[in-house]
Image (cartoon, rainbow, N blue to C red):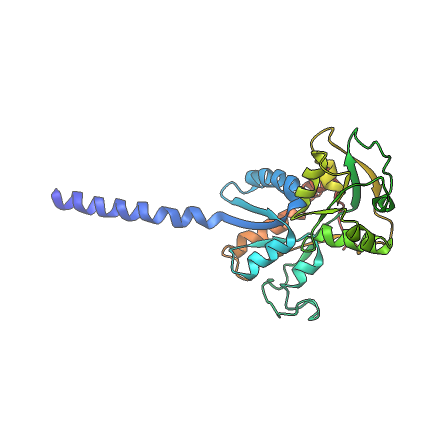
Length: 270
């Protein structure tokens, strides 16, 4: 009887120890641009119904910060960038002039363009007393301070392109009118708080801002910046490649497309 109890205890302990390895197999780590926070959180709830045993773990930040984290070895199954540049810097198949370090993190055959976006100028709602209506107004007395993403953030890079195309980038810097945010959500927060005269964000961020805090006064002039297309891909070092590929396929379905479009994204043409 004692031998039986000893054998039963040993088998029970072995079973308990084995359980965690199974439960962790369904976890997917997704590094995504901060501007996708609302849409991807909603989609995670949808995916829970489709794949109840799979857990989605998000890391939202600027695309440049996420790219650096991946490069430095942070565990990541899927990367979704707000710009092609950051993905290209990790893709060995990209232009070597962009991927200057010859990094090879993107799993072949998994990269696709997930959404497109627009850049807009926003002001604190109800406090636009100087009548800001155009990106050009940033160089006038109408604007005391403007919030932009920094040079490591795609929205900041698009903002730079816009103001350079208008010929006022150097003036904005010379007049010390710019305050920089480390990601687009920080830029939005500064405008929501009324800490700046205006800010440049994606249209989707303006759409998901706290109700009654901001309003869009202008869209970036046509041709003033590169097309805003978000690429997604499974990483070569993905711990759960099969699950990651399945989630990427899920992101392409009509239900997910409707979520993206409801927030203001558009779906790129193939």
